[in-house]
Length: 193
Image (cartoon, rainbow, N blue to C red; front, side, top):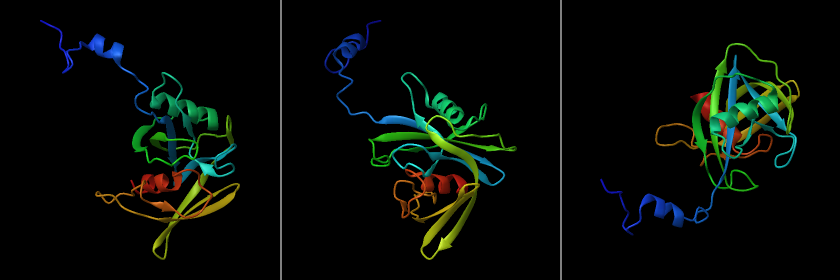
């Protein structure tokens, strides 16, 4: 059986030898962890720019050769100390501009736990803690409040829905500071799911 060739007559080996992986710009790949327990969500306070001091999901950049599943487990452990949390993938956030540093694509994982693991901020997280979640209408907007041991933050969202009636993370506008990146819209989607 002869080896398959493409329209240029190249075998796979010839195609790969001529292929330029820099032809297409690549995003940074991250993983974020949306962990719930008894109506609370696990958040970290960012210890560095961008969004220093704001709440965010535990997460971060994938290292070379690392799957997003491994990244999620590693970042959760590094930033909170939580180990062995069984997570499932629930959303991929890819809207350009979601991170002011550069184009990033975040594969988001979620879990719902029965018991609170002890958590403590580590790595680039200034702190980690469990936050009560309150969602309320504010006129035409949705108010999302996170309340924890270090206080509370409320952000208003102009929620847009996708064709399936779910929070459209890309089109939903977050109107207030306090929750980093697009994590307020992601959290609202996760809460509703």
